Amino acid sequence: MNNPCDLNAVEARRLIGSRSLSPEELLESCIARIEQVNPSVNAVVATCYERAREEAREQTERLMNGQELSPLFGLPVGVKDLEDTAGLVTTYGSPLYRDHVPDQDELLVARLRQAGAIVVGKTATPEFGAGGNTTVNPIHGYTGNAFDPSRACGGSSGGSGVALACGMLPLCTGSDSGGSLRKPATFSGVSAIRPTTGLVPSNSRRVGMTNFSVQGPMARTAGDCALMLSVMAGDHAQDPMSFHVPGGDYRELPQVDLSRLRVAVSADLGFAPVESAIRRIFMERLQKFTGVFRRCEFHDPVLDTALDVFWILRGVNFLVEHLDHYRNRSDELGPNIVVNVESGLKLTAEEIGWAHAEHTRLYRQFQTLFDDYDLLITPGQPITPTAVGQRNVTKIDDLPMDNYMHASALTSSLTLAGNPCVAIPCGLDHTGMPFGLQLVGPMHGDWFTLGVAAALEDLFSNDPDLERPTPDLRKLTEGVRRGAGS
Image (cartoon, rainbow, N blue to C red):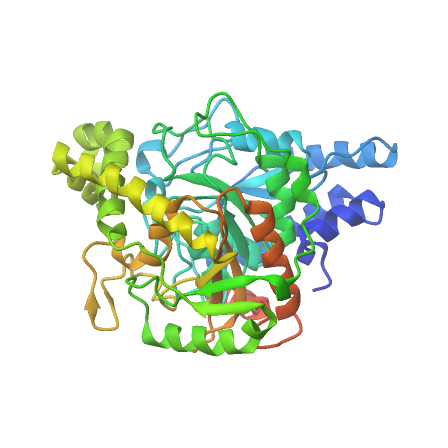
């Protein structure tokens, strides 16, 4: 951990501000790590090194001249390949856009760059983001887990999670509809927040009046996520769900006194399929730290129809996004896109109307949880990472899955609520892969929930069973060398 690329974002930014580290030094360290490790995991799928180097040179000159520095000044960032980047290929993981180079940055990317972040490259995603278990697409292939490339890294922000875990980049973007920030963060031993719907505005969603898909930060710590969120957050006229917040406040998280918190814990939300081994580890980890809370009780929120509601509304959204692709070029679409569109086509108006009304009922019912509790804690994921080639989870223990999103119920059901959900690492599981927690806070309580996450990360850092795990980069590099020599 002696390389600048291994610094967390807050510390790297502090060192840059004190002129102890230059943007050029940090960028070159990140590029070297990408070149060293990426061949074994395939997390970064496109790069713009020369443009990044030019921006880093300009920033270093500004730093030496004593000019005022922006919040993300000099910090390299990876952008998920679902998000448009000017002058840098953006494929959405689809052969239909293999050579697509946008003319301009989308809103999220523009805000990051305006705040001084240096875009280094694009991180891998499944085709159009449709894939929760593993990150794979027809253009770039599979992305391997940083802790074992033969195993899945989660999706759909899988490339971002792996790049962070390997120290390739200190900050990465992600997006989440059914768990696509939370899953890969958990499987990679890093942190992420699915923000309250509307906190991070988007000018790219075709279905604007929904809390399904949100964009958010991924990083190695909750504090790093907060730093990135301080730039991403804030209203915008192009997003009807956005609302005004003083984004800069996120740069200083609250000092949360854990001993004052009333906490609900649930292994499965009362209905979600969860591996028996993951349940056991969750219970073991709880015993190590829940004594710090004022009150901690098992409580399952009422989300009884969430699986059906989510699948129906997901089908509607896919019709909006991909019906033209399906009608005109279905032979070039992957199976997850096809099954979602075809599920949407089978829906009746009565089913869609029921799902919308039920969505509202579930939302209102879930919010009553915070009348009695400050926070809900669940496992970060219901399974240990599968083999990298297993696109979808078909069974958990002996329970068959109804569809490929069934295995994501632990995260997708909370998408319907729209509350902030933070993923934090919590040691390793029974197979030596990262284990994590999902922290769910009250609506618009992103600042508070990140503060709790930071406090727990600090607590966990003193326990080898709970602290953030790091992959063995030497093994990854040796694997590349052996492959080159065979």
